[in-house]
Length: 215
Image 1 (cartoon, rainbow, N blue to C red):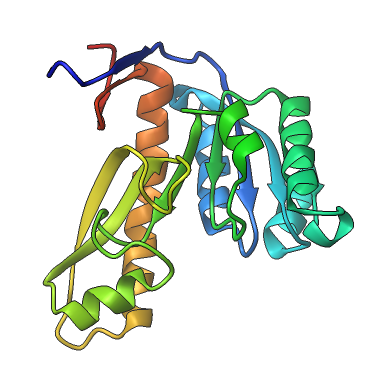
Image 2 (tube, rainbow, N blue to C red):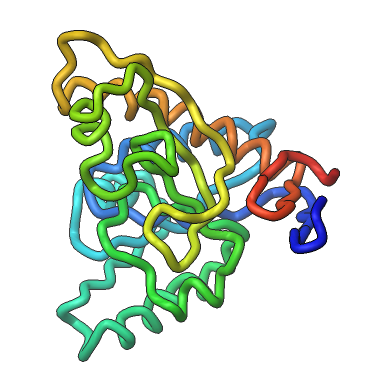
C-alpha cells in the first residue's frame, strides 16, 4: 500500500438485507431473488424500489416482496426526490443497495447516506466505454473482448471501485443488441456470485482495489 492509499475493511454481513433499485423488466432483480431463496447465499431481498411503475415492480408485488414507487414528477424537485428515496430506503434498513437497471442517477443524499454500500453493474469492462452506449462503443472501437463490470457507486458516472469483471468475447457478426444480450447473461451470474461473496466473506478496499475477504 502506498502512502496515499486509503484502506477500508468490511466485515461479513450475516443475513444481509438487500434493497434493489429497478426501472424496467427486472431480470437482475429476479436473479437476486432466486439466489436469496438459497440460505447458503447469505442474504435476502429487503425491498424493491422503482422510479416508475414497471414490470419489475409488478413481479415483486406478485411475489410479495415489499415495493415502493417514487416518481420524480411527484416531487417538487430532484433534491426532494433524492431525499424521498433516502427515506424509503431507510424504512427497510438495507445493508446493501443494488442498482439493477435503475434509470435515475443517484443524488448526493443517497450517495452520502449509503456510501460504500451501493452497487451497480455496467455492460462494459470499465474504465473502457462508460455511459449508455457501452456495447455499441465496444463494437465501434474494434475490441475483441467486451464484458460486464460490477462496482461500488460513487459521485461519478461508472467511476467507482471495481468489484468484479467478466469477459465476453466479441463475435465477428455481433450487433450492439446481440453483444448486449450475451453481456447481460454474464452480468447476472457475476452479480449473484459477487454479492454472495461480499455478504459471506466481507471485503477490503485499498485505494481503488476491491478484494473479497478481510485482508
